[in-house]
Length: 196
Image (cartoon, rainbow, N blue to C red):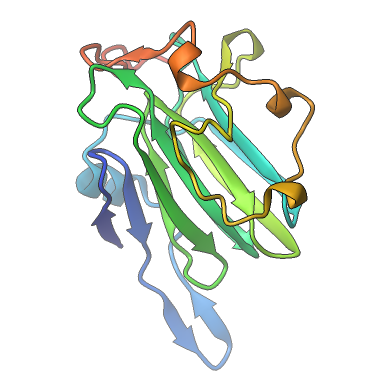
């Protein structure tokens, strides 16, 4: 597995080593040992999620507030998405900046998104099967979100606005500058590794 750094510290791409032969291919999609050695992050994944979406769907930008904050390791099984992580840590030198990468069934890449980031993706192919690991359990009372189309974030979702498909909830999130709760860049959200 190879680690590819992005323009935001802590957000990294994982590129697996793939073995091809006349039967197809094989690769390790996750190794806890390699993850800890290469990513150097004190996290333990406890929940796997999967979603299926059609072209034009935008999901996000979502996060969970402490003590239920989550890191995510995301990947695509079928199709392709533009995956986006936004730094929402007040006081961070990259606050309000984002990483946007294409994840697809062809490149087999995964994106690691630490606690302190909002996450979302747009579907670029007729259908996508999306999987992700979380290092904390889903807690509906701890949900937070930022508007996917916040003009200050300047995210190019690579989907025409009139083709974007949103959940009813995702149509009504606040802009980053108006958010009532954000992470603090000076707080270690991994200090207590116990799952809440």
